[in-house]
Length: 88
Image 1: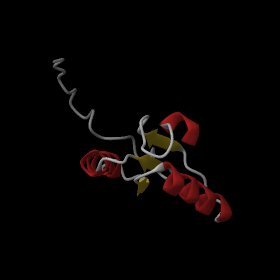
Image 2 (image 1 turned 90 degrees about the vertical axis):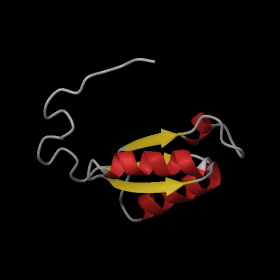
Image 3 (image 1 turned 180 degrees about the vertical axis):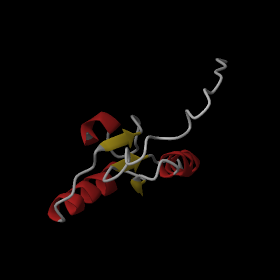
């Protein structure tokens, strides 16, 4: 177990740093998915969470159709329907 100490103010992003950012989170484990959503949402970033590769691809297509794109993605490597790296 690694132990790290937080630096004062390290839990805050610079003002406007997350503006316009969006993250796609893909994980078939509901607990992990919720934990990731809670963590990323705390950074005031738009978050889209899905449980499998098919839903992830649909979310990417919907975002593209709306003229948006995801600036980041957190993808479980071992999804039940497809390898996570194939999604990205």
